[in-house]
Amino acid sequence: MAIIETEAALHVAHRDNHTHRDVNGGWLRPAVFGAMDGLVSNLALMTGVAGGSVSHQTIVIAGLAGLAAGAFSMAAGEYTSVASQRELVEAELEVERRELRKHPGDEERELAALYEARGVDPELASAVAEQLSRDPEQALEIHAREELGIDPGDLPSPTVAAVSSFGSFALGALLPVLPYLLGATTLWPAVVLALLGLFGCGAIVAKVTARSWWFSGLRQLALGGAAAGVTYVLGSLFGTAVG
Image 1: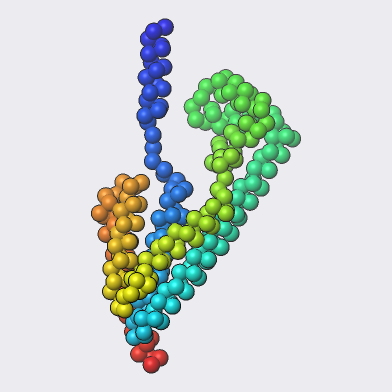
Image 2: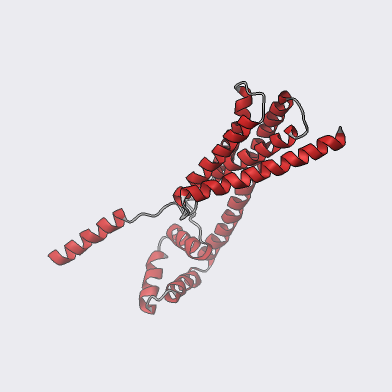
């Protein structure tokens, strides 16, 4: 008995200490990637406009307009995307709920077959499926997880996704505009600050991946710098052609 209790205690301790990072990136995608999107898109917009040899007031207006347009676009797109995904999931859950109500025996055997396919003995699989199927809501949750790969109690919120995307994009897009708002009259402070921000976002992403922080940071810096360089050249070409 003492040995069993000791093993149980060790199991609990291992379970409590054995944690994983957030592999789904629920907070990461709308926050960090939204900020990077704002940084890259607004930096590219501002460098493209600056390439046309316009005044710094025009660049500021372009940057602020890009911030507002991009943030609202991101929020609307994220809301629509997540809402559509949630509605699809809810529709599939309703199908599963209806099947559980009309054909409980078939659904119970289907659940047992799923456990058997994973290596559980047929007798044990049937017993587990029978016990889990006694509660309709629990049965729905189990079927949703096993068949659809979703948790009915943890569906994404369209409002939260939209607000997160709006805020993170706006914060990222504000960075290249900030030097101008603080008195800068040339493009370089905005470019430097935006590239530093991209490096920082890349380094933060590395916290939840297997990549080193400097590799991830340099990768984002290089991509953002390339986008800014290309749009600056295009802006110069367009400015010459229009002018």
